[in-house]
Length: 216
Image 1 (cartoon, rainbow, N blue to C red):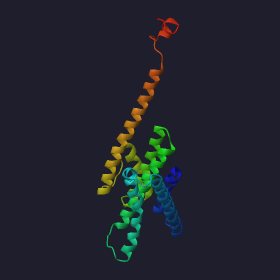
Image 2: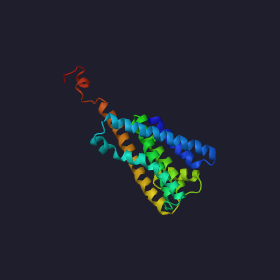
Image 3: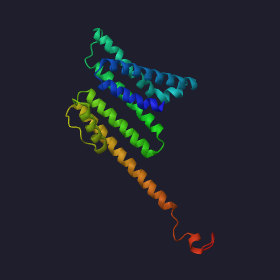
């Protein structure tokens, strides 16, 4: 399931970039197939937990992210003029990207057991998700520019050149994330050196002073 979560993120990216209708259909079917697997896995975990309230309290946010893609059905209603929401299609696409990002980041964190490896994997997912959002909201005309600016904003906290409201909010979020990343890296590096110093014997160690354990 961890590998599927990462692959699903790239399937959503392909749906955003592909222009060939045949490939668009293939990726759309693949996306719904992946989502069906995720729903089945969630229901299986709920069944194992006997659908207890504790399970739903802990995993209510997963229910929301599993339901977000079904907003696409309202796009069909909009086409039939039963629902008139001008930005519903864009909201549905953004919801799908965020859902894939959450699934992908959790999967990447589980696949890599080390803290540094997990942090790098999650950061890559954040860059991909933010770039897809910039492109989906037409903040950038091409995906390459969106990917470049998202990477800069995720690492440095600045770099998004567009001046619309969504870009400003995204840049603030990425700036906060970049601070958290560097704080985590600094803490991990300091902990590594402190462990090294604590493991190094000092001159006051009884073993070094007397040459015999337990005698000074």
